[in-house]
Amino acid sequence: MKRSVLLGLFVTASLMASTSFAAEDLCAVNLKTIENAKTQIPPEMTEQVMDSVKQAKADHAKGTKQGTDDCIAETTQTIQAIQKSSDGGKQ
View 1: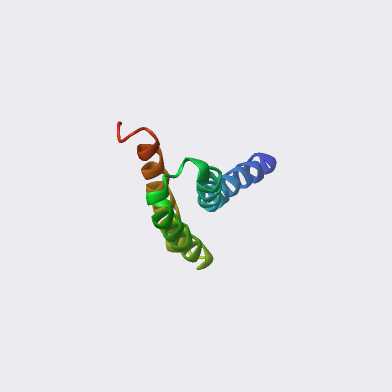
View 2: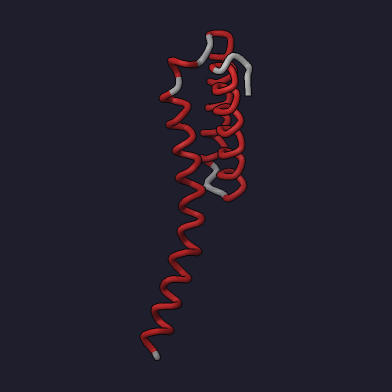
């Protein structure tokens, strides 16, 4: 029984910890996605995208949950804008 309890605690702790790491990873993944999409960014959006990346990196550098959430929100919006522009504005 002691092993079951310890295993349960370990699994619970792992799941709780993985959500915070996943959020930080999502921010980094989104930044990498934007970096990889640079060839698809229309010239008129380049400055906007660079400003967005700069803001996202600043948010991520705060090292707080709010900063990570802000980074994810910023990068997600930028990725959507890039996708929308590459689709010709279609959804």
